[in-house]
Image 1 (cartoon, helix red, strand yellow):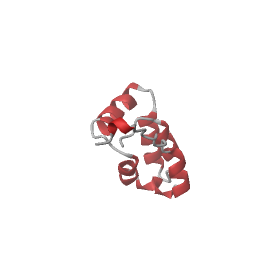
Image 2 (cartoon, one colour):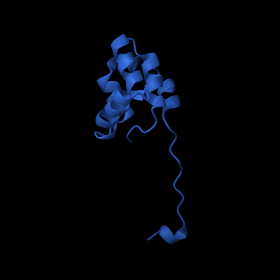
Image 3 (cartoon, helix red, strand yellow):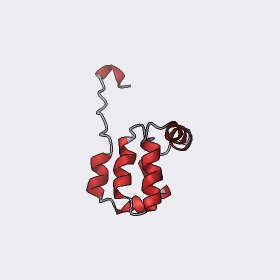
Length: 86
């Protein structure tokens, strides 16, 4: 699902080995007007997921799978009642 929580970008920036990529991720996560606009255009409008961000910023791929799972939001359970079954 698309990124809604900017904390994911901050955590990925901490793992970036390229300083320019880290700075860009931190800008995207910031409340700076330029950062907010970039986030809207790059992340929101294109509905980028964390996987897309890892592809765009390859120096973040140093994050371990445990680290990645730790920063992703948990998936809430879907509760169904007998009324929802066909």
